[in-house]
Amino acid sequence: MKNKQSLQEELRAYAESGMYSFHMPGHKRNGKWAEGFSSPFSVDITEIEGFDNLHHAEGILRDAMENAAEIYGAERTWFLVNGSTAGILAAISAVALPGERILMAENSHRSAFHGLALRGLSPVFLPVPLLPEYGIAGRVCPEDVERILSEDAGREGRKIRAVYLTSPTYEGVLSDIRRIAEISHSHGIPLLVDEAHGAHLPFGTGFGESAIACGADIAVQSVHKTLPSLTQTAVLHLGRGGEKYFSPETLTRWLKVYESSSPSYILMASIDACIRFMGSGEGKKAMEAYEKNLGALRGRLGELTHIRLLSGEGQDPSKLVLFPDKRTGLTGKGLADLLRSRYYLETEMAARDYLIAMTTLMDTEEGMHRLAEALVEIDAGLCAVSEDGRRAPVQVPAVSENEHAMELARAWNMPKEYVSADRAAGRICGDFVMLYPPGVPMLLPGDRIKKAHAESLLENAKLGLGLEGVRQEKENILLPVLER
Image (tube, rainbow, N blue to C red; front, side, top):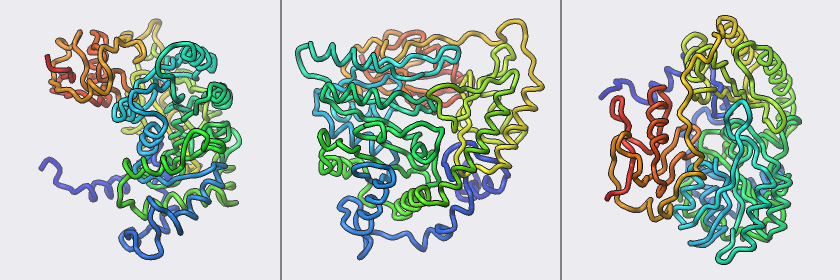
């Protein structure tokens, strides 16, 4: 055994380490919120008399989900214990038949592409422009949605059955859901929104509108990401008017496929307690205090000299996306390492050029002050050289620009082998390959691998970033390719 301590012992040691969480889950390991769950074994039950059945809810669970729908302004809400992934898979499965097509934003999470592969569906890619100066995915352009759907209406064959996009993104960028919903509906198709990072939106004043409030037909939210709920908890909302496109019975049927038949009552109680709290006066007060503290924190970070805070229209302020000046030679990963080792602050995600620190209403004023002081101190010690202190990254095409040499579902199910990065160019990819987090594929099954893909993966591996879909052997990367 490599680790002499058990996982439980490691978790306990971490909890006592003094490390502050600027990452999910949104409860931020706040002991006050855990009072009702102090002894989880004492309330861990199954579907006994009086406690209903998630997959055939007629009693206490039905009432809890109806209450959640009322608070969120949805036609209907389902509790999810397999994360947003289960809701995304169910929604995609319910909206189209095998062989049909979905207009899908190219920065979609891997779970959406898994849904396509499982159901034998094909993506029509919706481009997502990069934010100027930052190089990360920006807002979906409503004009692109209109253009693609209009072109599709004039073509022969099976039509696009739905529009699917992510808002807010992992970095907190919000698209114009209201306008995109109007366009989708004008073409007679529904809008599905991966809103995993937006469960908090309806409860504040400056975070942006929720997808359901803007007319989306389906919105899937991870309550554990930005609200005080246990990891793995999420909800699926059917929007008002969404029954025109989705039968609640069909959604329920697919949720039975993708969710456990033995759902945890602790997780379901966590969802219920979280949403009741957010809909209460106490929750409102907590959000008001949080917004005040967050505003002060962002104000201080906006004054940094060598570390830039992402801000502007369509940006969820709860996400602190920080870009070190490239001329300092400091990477996003390097900044995250400094915050962890020197200041005991753990961030959500670090990439080559930036990091993400997640805040929620469970953050303390003291915790936010610690982050501000740490970044001010780090910033003061940085010095910009005359030129970019880092080598330019390998430019990788967007997934929509890849050569899709074979149908996604077919390639995913074919025999595959692993070859070293220097021999992968020209071969057909056999799996989903991505940086994780955030889990947005750079290669899909069926895509022809380019030299730039292999070089980028090697570069990110050397930076110590998380990769999925590949095998790492010392300093080499092995890519999954179809057997010849």
